[in-house]
Image (cartoon, rainbow, N blue to C red; front, side, top):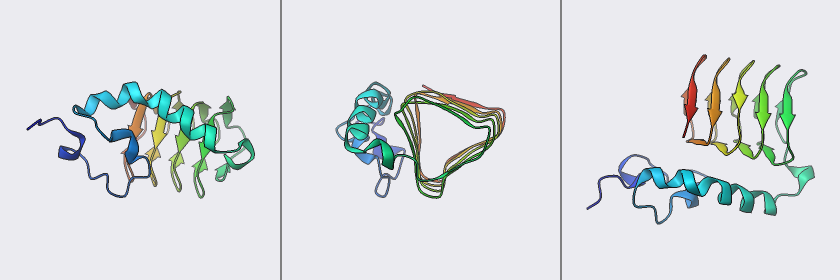
Length: 135
């Protein structure tokens, strides 16, 4: 039995993006899958349906492949580069930096001055202020 399978670490039963983990033997294998997963995700979502949350004045979004779920809040001076998914009811804090290949689940929090890149945060995960989450 492989001790590094994702199901040994996470309950993915309700995670919207659990398909990313299917067939993975070692939990770290998902990082190589993120770009292709995001490419397929954005191929299915029309550009005009990608921003459902609130983007406060002063926030910067770079690129077309950015999805912001319903009820999500992007605070002033947050900087977001696509491709990325900000899940429903998630928060990206003031001066946070989201780099490409990031997926935030529902109710995830990227705090003030926190940077995230090439990462997945499951539902209800939080990275408080002044952190780096990546790879």
